[in-house]
Length: 243
Ligand SMILES: Nc1ncnc2c1ncn2[C@@H]1O[C@H](COP(=O)(O)OP(=O)(O)OP(=O)(O)O)[C@@H](O)[C@H]1O
Ligand SMILES: [Mg+2]
Image (tube, rainbow, N blue to C red):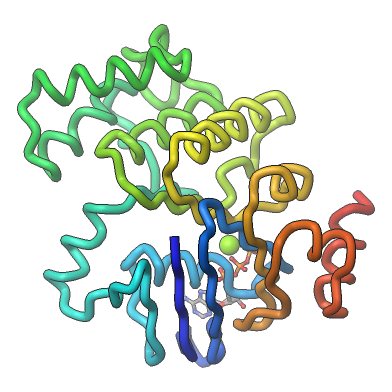
């Protein structure tokens, strides 16, 4: 993907959650956002997902501007996959139905086709034995993997993930990270917020450090991890690696 962001401003309450944030990323399949809590990562992801309109500034993805109108944003949101915390599975539906319902209702696929896509995804990610369980009957890792399967079911070219492994134990984290790595290897573009530094280093083509609503540093993983220039990056890495 190519991502060009210029002077993005987003005010929440009286706080500049994004404070004239600018960046350019090119030839990047997986873009990872790191940074301290409250820095603006989720806000940036919500703007990129078309869920939140910026107060000013511009975003271009693969040379196309983010739409401005509500209808434009609605159509845009259908073309991307999102996995956000607390914005995930329908609790009253089975895992299978969680995947097929949006395919039928939002994307207009015939039920037979939606079912076939869901079946294939569940097999591919070894979730078929959970097809008929409801979210409350699944582990956190299984829930999160169903949420990712649902997000990629319409085959979006771009998938946005906000801390998909937070609140998971190490084994479940590994399962979810493996799934994300497979998406990347599939040729899908990914923008991921995570605090899993080892994973970030392994899968990211480009990493940005987001702090105080702006970009403290951006570059390939090697540069960020082996020779961080910004004191913000240095302090974030030192703190995150210590525990
Ligand atoms: N509705 C709101 N009203 C006022 N301030 C808000 C609101 N939502 C978020 N903020 C503030 O905006 C800033 C950025 O929040 P954001 O959720 O984007 O941070 P983050 O980098 O995702 O943090 P974390 O790592 O903890 O998830 C924070 O200081 C937060 O307190
Ligand atoms: Mg966040």
